[in-house]
Length: 293
Image 1: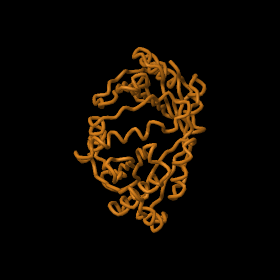
Image 2: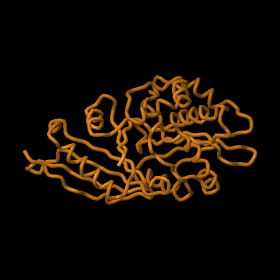
Image 3: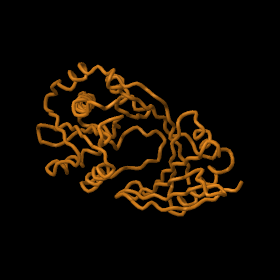
């Protein structure tokens, strides 16, 4: 049975990327698969594209995924991209598909969850309450307060040396506009952004941050975004301090939350140690693949 591939365009580009999309359908017009190609547009990542392919399980091994992949790769090359990234759960059909089509493994990830009903909240609270000489915690909901916007944008370089192994990820260049746009995008989705940050009391600058995105109704699972500390302030337990405070705050503010989700590169031993110390339980592993165009 022949399949039709229809090209689509994302109607809502973001400040840092836009997407192309393709829909695969059978001869009766029923959708059987899709592909989304994210094209990054900000300085430091103009070489990069990110791919997500999904094919209905009953339609697999019939060439649908290959045709979607061909369309996406051709578009990425037309856009003069150097690298194409895609992620799959370890051992899944997607894992086998990407490996068979020329992608190479560049990063291993562990996904973990902190089930709040089973968490040691007393111990987490003790960690959050520990004093760290020369530093204090601050926090906000949604968009960063104007008086902290510039120093928060500067603190984002804490993620520049995040372990990415062989991934051609480039460098995310942050400024105040990008910080504000990211927060606005989360709010537009109806979700809640909570940020905990560490301030250097010597000069009032932000030297680390931990972000958590909570479903709008305060139920289900929340997702950790970035947690990072500037290199010159590492080795003082600030990452653990912030993440513990983020957990405690989430539990107090959203008592119906079920858990907190995070994903960490296997090579990021420091952050994995923080997650282990706070009680996060691994749920599955994923693989980041890269195709050099």
